[in-house]
Image (cartoon, rainbow over the protein chains, first blue to last red):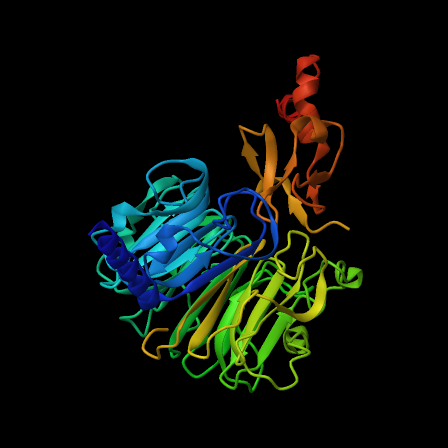
Length: 404
Length: 84
């Protein structure tokens, strides 16, 4: 009898695993437990994660910040782990390191559809368009009208009668995209010295209440991105806008600048000195950096100031070494980059000191190199890739067109 | 090679570390103490990796502390005297 029960249990468990059948790997800097491997160690090769909290819920997306991670489940629940000393984990207490995924229970009554992780703050958007933020607020990046940090997600009252679609958290600033408005779609708050808020031509230090960006009046923005002191937006017709800290010697831009290109972009992701953009044709392009940011190319460290318009175009380079293979996903860490090809291969390049490239060493790479996950991927599996400052996560799931 | 130039006003004072800090791309923090600044040090290092930044600051701002202890008037007060 007992044996039968046990067998049933095992059967149930197997069924459960089959139902989700997703796998998550992490690698790179682990100094704050952000890899969810249960240690504070770096890993130079992908680690397949086994923690029950990850296998018992269907993870639909991840957001990786300075040293913390937010996982979103398909049931609208949120798990966080890693560094929590500014309250960025939203678990109601300040903690140095959380080694394993832990639920953000204060959001349990909401169905969360979108999350973002900044350097030390976090943002959550619910299906009914509410925005919640927590973590470091010392630059106004939480948008609550003050400079206070919070260790539990707090609703941003400024947007209480609006429908928020997305939040993008950078190093010390945040961008918000609304879904109910064609006139005032994108807002910025937090640190603004490098122009990353896009709200003023004047040099301003910081803003603690959301302010609307100008320049998108007759455009429909579908995606926003923020990292370091950079900001970006992609419009429905494939235009890419960047603002904030200038790339590779360009001057800072205090309002959204259209990238002069005939390409049609679908996604943009930002590092601390570079941007990666994906076209509808599955081609990847890099703005700024020099294949891996400024780290290994000294001649880019002290570039002469040049007119930004010229550089903005010439700065863009196609991601090399792919021989026409299409790209299905891209991600940028502070100083590294990752992509997934249509053949379900993960490739990484850039800064490798903490093993964030997952190539088994700590070398830098100038062009994309294939990461071995240590197992074959099923044809029905799709992979997505996510980068934190100095670490990387890969998430596989069964291809399902309805789930993005 | 310095990763970046950062103004002291953009760094944060960290009570626990007793140092001015700035985010490092590895996930840790570049750090420099007040003592370092008084000595004219301008390199803030990250304890977890090989990167460092150059801190832009006015050395007098940090010497002022020390000087006032030695009954030496900091520049601001001197200015007040001349105005009066």
